[in-house]
Length: 283
Ligand code: ATP
Image (cartoon, rainbow, N blue to C red; front, side):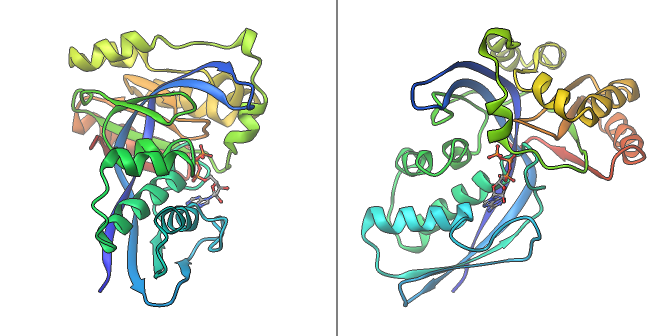
């Protein structure tokens, strides 16, 4: 019998790069929250000891390079499981967009296998496995609003942002996080005010949140892809209250308090950019 898991995307309310470590990774401080734009994962147990991935996508491999495959392989190896699983992925989250789609899929597979094989592992245990797969997988296990530290694997949950609408606009390009991180000049980096973002969450102050969202990687990605700057400007001009790039980009999001205004901005952005979504926060 098949079992289903939702794999929701994330946006960064802040992303600060602190320093580069000896292992080549960067220490970061990121506040992330989950949005209602999700991939759908279907898991079916197999008696045979193999992992099979089915998905239709021009951009995502369906072999061992898929993060969902890596998640299942890591899970099986760690607990010595000799059974197999067929993983069907229906992608709705744009790929290489800064929305954590691959990590969301991997986390959904870990949560789903925990149910399928009745392992009864805690969220913390699943997050620890996730940390070995990708830097946003631990966050995606919880699917709440949280601050991530270390290379993204140390998660502390926070209160939810004030209710609002989110418009996502993705230019017609994909951005590899690795490429953007390679361009970082640590001396000249912009740093957001993470503390102020946290305060705005606890004060449920929508406009304070909008004033303080910030992303160290945004100047780097928009230098390489000026589309990001243009979309950001357009979204501001049309009236979004807070506008920022998510992750390493290129997706830009706008925060809007009221539904009518959000719909107006969504329609306006559709004239400007091919891929536009109107979503809500669920984290
Ligand atoms: P990142 O910050 O990790 O780059 P992202 O949200 O910008 O995340 P993803 O959509 O996760 O980007 O895709 C990043 C890369 O991961 C792509 O090259 C893609 O082919 C690969 N990938 C592997 N598995 C998946 C998956 N299940 N879904 C999406 N991408 C995947």
